[in-house]
Image 1 (cartoon, helix red, strand yellow):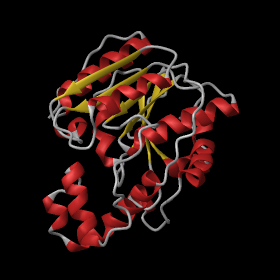
Image 2 (cartoon, one colour):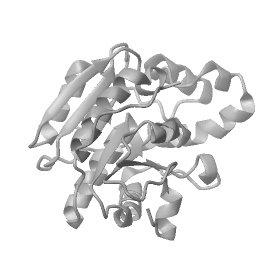
Image 3 (tube, one colour):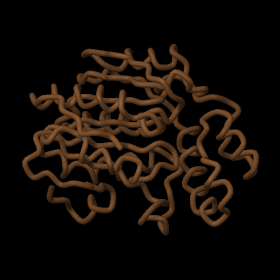
Image 4 (tube, helix red, strand yellow):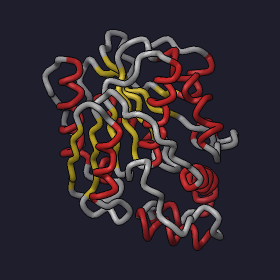
Length: 263
C-alpha cells in the first residue's frame, strides 16, 4: 500500500500485502495501542491486509496531543484514510473504536468515495445509547483508575504498579474518554453495509440491549455474537472471535477461511 505522508502517521500496516483484495482497518479502544492488533496480520486470510489506526498521544505519536473531541478528529482521520481506500475495505472497531469506525463510515458517505464492505463492532453500545454516567474523564487520577477497572477491567496490574508506564498511558486514556463521553450522536439514515457486533459475556460495561441497537444502523445484514470473556475478549481470549472474523473476511474475499495457530 502506497500511503501519502499524511496517511503514514495515522495508519500502521504490520504486514504489507501488495496483492490484497481487502483492507481491514482496525480502530482502537480508548488508550489502545497499535500493538494490540499487530499479531493479527499473520492470522488473517492471505488476501486481507491489516491496517491499524494509530491515534496521536501514544506509541510513536506520544509527543502529539491526543484529540478530545470527535468533531475535531473525524475530518482529519477521514482525510488520512481516503488515499488508502483504493481497494475494497472493512472497518473493525473495539469499544471507542467502534464509534470511530461508524462515524468515519458516515463521513465517507458524505464525501462519496466507496464505503466499507462491512462494519465489525466489538464491546460497544450502539451509538444512540448514551454512555454510562457519571462520566469518568474529569475524575482525579486514582478515582479515574478505580472506575476504569470497575467498569472495563481496563488497566492491567503490571501497568498500575509501574508509575513510569502509567504516566505515559493515562493522558491518552483520559483524552479518549473525554472524546467518548462528550460524543453526541446525530441521527442519519442507516449504512448500506452489513454490521456484525461482537461482545464478551462477562463484559460489565455493555448490555445485550445496548448491542442490539446497532441493528438500526444498517439497511443490510446484521448479526450479533457473544463470546466468553470481558470487555477485552478479542485480545484475552482471541481464538473463537478470530475464527469468526476470519470466516467473515474470507467470505468478503471469496477465500477459504483458514487460520494460523494462535500462540
